[in-house]
Length: 530
Image 1 (spheres, rainbow, N blue to C red):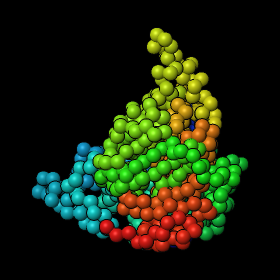
Image 2 (cartoon, rainbow, N blue to C red):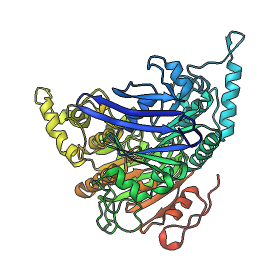
Image 3 (cartoon, one colour):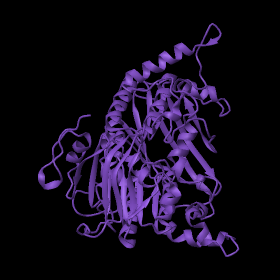
Image 4 (cartoon, helix red, strand yellow):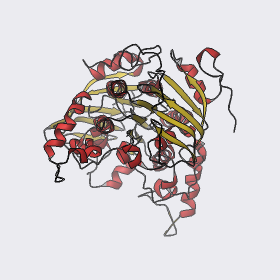
């Protein structure tokens, strides 16, 4: 009961869940009160996703109970009853690409009029929701035509259209631009003011402190702290999350010359370019690039950042051969790569870490060893073309160890791993063939603070060790703050180029294209207009 004697909108007590030999949850309890936002935080593998699945009715717990407004939760077989009580926006998109925006928003809950599906009314409602959020998304568009951030908006719109009193948001800002994140927070506050209970999951701790009233910390499948948000500092929260495994020095908020590995950054290499990008242009719904040129020397680490619509991810995909260019060229060590040919890019030595690990990064039913060695399978095969599992395991083991991969063994299917450990497999696959160029698009999205440091360190060390050119394309500033230099894209064009020491506020202003930089830290960056 709360102070007014009301039962929580959602109450889970003594929740335990085991998968094989892994104890995912240990007698976990959470309470969602009407009109309050509860932040659920913890490292990858702490049990957050399992708890969300149980609270959403996808899994039945091995022990414990879930209650809504003091009454027992329905059976997991009664999907409609669960959807009437709780709406969930998941970390990875759950929209059906072949369906329209309207069809996805009302999926499983069609509105009828006079015994017929009311398509006109549903399209009107979907348009009103999009309008209210300030998003320019056509309700009749197929979701396969939308950018990643637009699909996320459809997910949120579906939850809002359900009108439930309990909303679970699992990494809801992962694919949103900063302006859209502000809109999301405004909407969450409006929902809680109307009595909706919200569970908010995010690895961005500044978001948790900004939007959440209360915080529950999970570690190793158990609750280690419940507190009002105002009672905790960020440092205390990180300590509770990671225990003895504190983040690497120099990662959180690096402002000076130290890199993700905590070592002093050397001067920018003055050698021939390992990667050359010349006047690259590519039109894309996910953000176009226009006339972008970039040179990266051996061992150099370059961050490319900007808003999602600025073409940051598109640039990374074109360089990696995942998309063709409309014009311009990409070259490795002076040799031009055929545009849009991932095989040619791989043969030229370009390793790639995609933004969407679930869609592009791994094959869930294959093992860790099989996923990591996909790009070097031919190298591991015998003269007769036989590829032995032991050869895969021997090749995959060193990177798995360097990346501190948490798994039951290298034969475990990647689909069974936590999101952070899946991302480690994706990074391992990009590094295993000893690339000359490493392209990583938002490589730390959806991973915890300690894993972020580890992944950035591994990418940086590989670049230094092998003399590879590292390009990290990300709208997350922590991904690029430890780079040797940062290239800022605004509306698809290079607007600024910065070198350490970096000022976070100035960098944010640069990505918005609204502030001029002093001559001592890159080119002047005037406001950019279309």
